[in-house]
Length: 68
Image 1 (cartoon, one colour):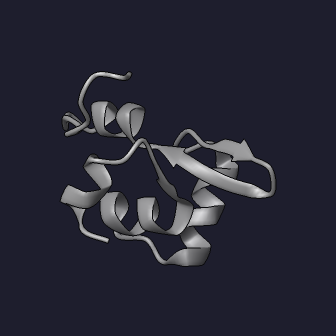
Image 2: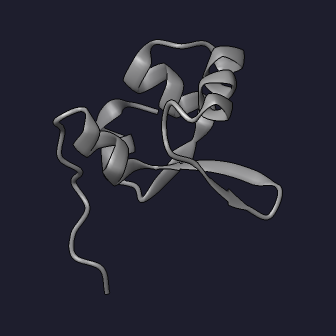
């Protein structure tokens, strides 16, 4: 996944968020999420990262349109 693709989605997997936004490996990304370094949402058995708050925290904009 590219950064541009991530910025166009509402949520992304923890390893992708860690890698794209912070240069972290898989285990380090999950550890950072566990510590609360970035926001996560648990959906069933999956943990995902909402892109908009993370991008805003880093001074970036998402490429998503208005919600339907």
